[in-house]
Image 1 (tube, rainbow, N blue to C red):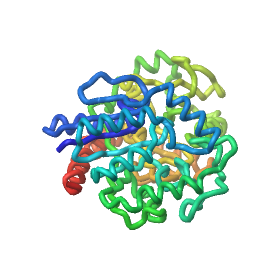
Image 2: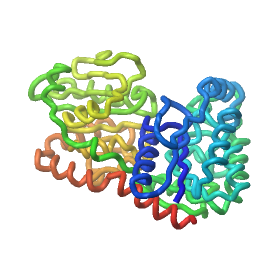
Image 3: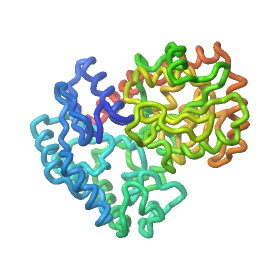
Image 4: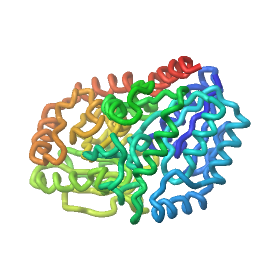
Length: 405
């Protein structure tokens, strides 16, 4: 088979890692595979092509904010992508994320429709069945026609103009008559949301995300503890997310929880603040350490390994790979039961509570820490590394590819 994978990133971010892992599996198992991506550093490997032009991405982002339209610009970048598809002639195009100001999604999909190329489209968020939102939260306007968007200023943001009704109608015209399309959801939660959208009745399959378990495993932690001056005999609660202090990623909830638990022998570590600093950058109290993004995966695995608990306080997630990584390194999970995050939990969500319930979360955190043991950590890591391997994910995608041909 000849598979083309398309995403916003490659080897960067959760979806960029997923795409690269799929590419790696396909190549190792005798298939032909290529990646086209729009943003981030250039990856100099065979059949990996960054088609997005950075200057055009900035223009696209500005026009989106001014005109309220997303996915309508980046004509030169999109032409570069279509030219690559013309040359590569894939049997299947596997799309992941097409939002992020780097491509004209209508131009690309209409080209693939005209060529009758089979598409597998993995939905990593709600963008393709809403007017514009990555997550619609409690809003149900997408079920009908959008408009009067309550999240107009959320990503992808518009300053003033609400074009969500128009964009949802465009997406309906784009996808409803495309028979050669399979939608993949990484979680049962998102699959349920697809089933109440305009895409209900379309081919739909759940394939959970996978990670590279050769990276995520328990590491030595004493040097890290010394490096960042962790006090002896304190429990470590870890939260990791890009832009972790944003409303959706929930870092502010973690800081509020830390204040509630400030008299207990616990340190809260947050990784992913929007800053260029390389180490501890700010303190929100004696029991909180805040770090910028850690790009070195081996170093990040040491943070997971030192954690007594991984805490997820996001407003909404699909099937977050941070939860997979944490468990592969042995840490249990706790957090808010929103979206599909609880589906990742090998402890069946026993330490998850309703969104915003800080009192309940503090109880769950104490319980999770007290109940965990070295034996359970070892068992959790072993099971997670079996369950969450990207090879397992890739094998399911290969079966889906074959069924589409």
